Length: 347
Image (cartoon, rainbow, N blue to C red; front, top):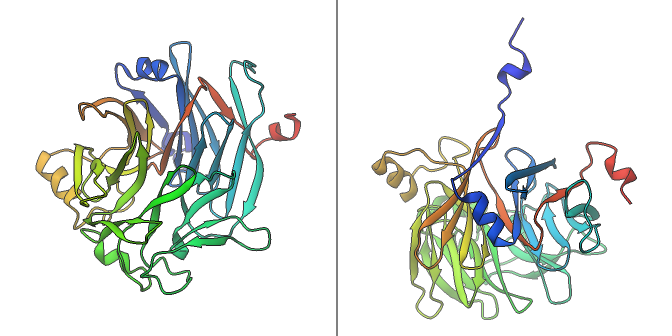
């Protein structure tokens, strides 16, 4: 008889650094984390002073679009885009949770590889349709509706030519996107991972910064444009006037997923999904030089000092983080899924 499932199945292990819980309490919010590698969505909060981890299973959950103060967020899965809505009234509690997120709307998009998601000034979702190299929104009569694509992409094609993955919003409108290259052929970005990445200005279509290594997660925070370079393991800022990337800190993993809480950045880092993931990248060379393995974690970076002040280490079944979101004003959230009958009786 072979080994039992309990002996072979990896477990989920989450461990905060010494002051992680204290920081989360002081932040006034909670965290949402997606990992398509494990098919999980995690909501991280506090129950008194102890970590509360609530998980749900979805097929290939990826991008998160938190809408602060609205009681809702967006999340993409393999072929759908979901709008999650909190069913609790302000101040209401249910079983110790102060938010109960329910998937109230699901748009069937097909497998278009939705990465970053945001909500525009009209309340509509805007997302990176990475497989089709464009920004898009939902459509009533189709898979999606194209909103914008880079000048170097000559037509709408399901070829993931440049891996347009990141979206930064400003005043309810798309402001910047990140692409892993400016190639116009099927998966051409794969040969430009080391230095082909760009940041593009959506309004003008111009290149703001070039020579980047796998840029992800552009975000505007307090008037500054921030990104992560997954290929170098660096988190830093971009000066749109000069195109210069100013690194703030090094993170020992594939950096992807970025949000903010006050003067702290919250960044997800991952282990390689396969042996070749880091090949040819500065990140791999840096890890080898430092003599340390890659990690899967959520890192909390002080924007004033560049120090990684806190960390939530994730081990076991989860080896890769796709996106992270900060949910202000919610201390201990939960979420409904489709794997049990609870969603049928939650009113």
